[in-house]
Length: 168
Image (cartoon, rainbow, N blue to C red):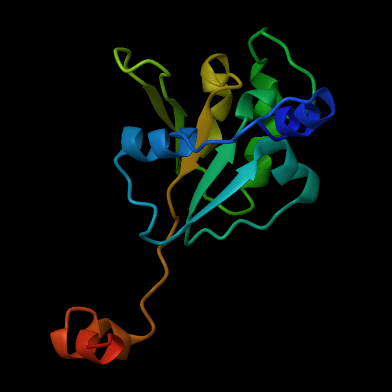
């Protein structure tokens, strides 16, 4: 949408960007997860490997465009199983071999059922045929962060604490 907006001005066209339901919203619904618990981080698959971003394993991880891994070009052909070897090895720096990965294709039509495939990190190549460009990966936290501020935790359900935080 940003490219359309940029190109519209020289052509004398008016463009207005409007919010919509995103693939991320659908992913939360399809997996029935609450992103506010433990936090969430997102990466584009190839960029993750190019920049070698560190992954915070205490937060959930969303990885976009897995079907376009290692290329900026488009192909409708299925991925070869070896395409994901380098990616799997990168994830193994942060997650154990048996860590679950959810490959989610959220259907664009409400009458169709979304596709969710669950597999272990070490078995990603077995799912290469379903990892197309519209699939998003979700990795739950390895170990959620421990609560360190016990004093604040004790006040979360305290009405007196809420009164102190709000104006009358």
